[in-house]
Length: 594
Ligand code: PHE
Image (cartoon, rainbow, N blue to C red; front, side):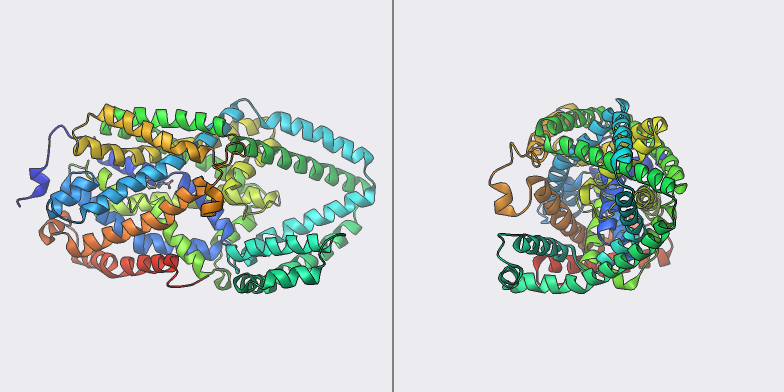
């Protein structure tokens, strides 16, 4: 075969207009809900510091070399994933399956991605309608009434609890990370059952306990949590004693003022929590927003590579960084900033479980858009042979910086309000509005900015997801760009409807959850992030490191120093595949770590 990059080049195929345009589009794909929505909440769930460090190592050792590999494959072949492997290794090559896998993965991720993006759109609109304002007003009125009717001692007690909670929340989140999440789930069930058993009419604590602990796996989990829970209790008890001493000395007026503020914040938190619940549990609303979001995505993709994707990214990416910097600046002046910085950046060796390491690795794929051919596709629109390693470092660096900034924006607010950092997927949607409601009228502007930021980040990523699937039909099946974008977008939207209805009690897919143990939405995310992306990434690494024709690889690496090339080869041939294989083995259950 002669040089495939010349053979298969068709002049009317899309191309990036400039080097910067490509970098912005690729960074736009990488920076998305993964950075602002998912990364902070999994960092919270995994106890902060060390998890972040492990994630950074995964980006450097696994993500970066695979990104170079994907861009290289795409650029050499000038084809989307299925075509790329055919072009490079011949029409009968089994590597084509990797391309197919990517298309399926893109299809699945986009189907639930539009649902989360839709929630962000709903919140943007709510912010424009100033939804936090009436919440703040009602809460103020309720807090005044509370002040007028509540005995001083009761107020003092509430303040003590709150002060103790705020003093320990960061530490508790860190310590919690010492036991795996599945064990904490078991612990919750256990505690609940014991409380019920102890109530009048219950079975009695001893009987209930014996029945639960009969299950060996369950008992093992409880044993894991028990010492950790005891340490947390101790932390809390100490903090409570300190807080009690603090308020014992306070004046009655001080107490009333502080208690009123506290009560107002509780009401705000309740109302905001309910607002998020309504969006998520209303399938019709969710479907409506997902449809609207998909429509915008389709329009951009139909617009083409340089006049659609690149043009939009050029405007949206700088905007996104700007909004984020404003939000971080606000957070830097919050009392929770100090604890947040130490939560995110202070690695504490005893705080992380192996399952957290594996989760960090899986997220490295998701956040860099790797393992499904998005970077192969974007690389295929590159005309000039720029330095691949430098480009990849730039894209991955930008993505990582934004993920860390998102944490520095979110955690100060969470800690200032004594919120739980391990709150899960609702973290961003619940915690940020608390701050907005407190700020008052300026908060409305920040709220609009913030949720618009989420939508923007999601849009540039969704575009790349749709592009991977659509470009197959454009390149391989000869469809026009418009036809491919509209039809594929429509089909993926339909497939996303069950995700939008996943949390709607009226339309619950009755047999899904009992059968698969997760909602439809979570099943899709789990399937894609934990299986398809790591498997796709592993195969790409093996292909780029071992099977890609040497001549082509050499041509793509031309002009780079021997040390860089050797370093990359070492990572993509040995380190990256070994680490990813480790994740997969653990997931299969051959290797049990938690
Ligand atoms: N990287 C995107 C994010 O962080 C998600 C994504 C995954 C986009 C895979 C494209 C391909 O949100």
